[in-house]
Image (tube, rainbow, N blue to C red; front, side, top):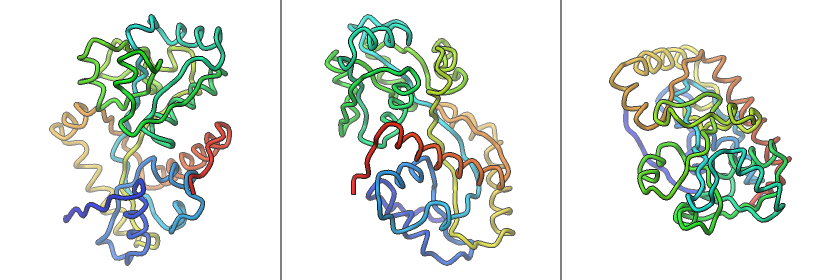
Length: 260
C-alpha cells in the first residue's frame, strides 16, 4: 500500500481526488468526522460526502478532554456551568478553529447546558491561553492531552465520550457529568470511491477488521486514546450517514455559517 499525503483545505483536496478516482479497488481515502464538518463549512464542495464515497471500515474513535485553567477554580463540569450561568456571556472557550473537534465539542456542551459563552478560535488551539487563565476552558483532543496535563496548569473536568477512557480513568465522562447530549467523539475510518465493487469493499473491510484485533496494534492505538469499534460495512455506512446529519443539525443549532 502506498500512502499519498494530500493536505489542503481541511482534507477537501484529498477527498476530491478520491471522489474522481476509478472505483477499481486501488484508491481509498482516510475518512473522518471532517466529512461532516466540511459539508457545513463549505457551500460548494467538489464532491458529495454521501454519494461520492462508500464507507469501508471504521478504524476508531477518540474523545476530547474538557480542561480548565487551575486558576479558574473549576473542579467539575458543574462548577463551570454554574459560573457560566451566573455571568452570561462572560466565559470563553478556545478551539483550534471553526469546525474543529474542539469547537464542535464546545458547541455541544454550550447547547446541552443552555449556557451563554463565547467561542475564541486559535490557529494553535489556544491551549497556552487556557493555561495562562486568559481563556476559561478548552476541549483538547485526547491524543494531545497527556503532555499538556503534565504542565500542572490545567484541571481535567471531563472527557466528551459516553464512558470513561483508559488514558484518564479518573476523569468522568460528559454523560456522568449530567450532559448526555454533549457527547462528542472524533472518528477515523477508510472510504472508497462510489461504485467500488462490494466484493472489494468486503474483502478490505474483513482484512482491516482482522488487523485491528492485533494486540500490538490495539495497544498502540490505545496509547493515542483511540478506541476501536468493530462494525459491519452496512453499520459503518449508517454511522457515517448519521454523523453527517448530526453535524449539520449541530451547525444549524449553533449558528455555524459556511466559510465560503
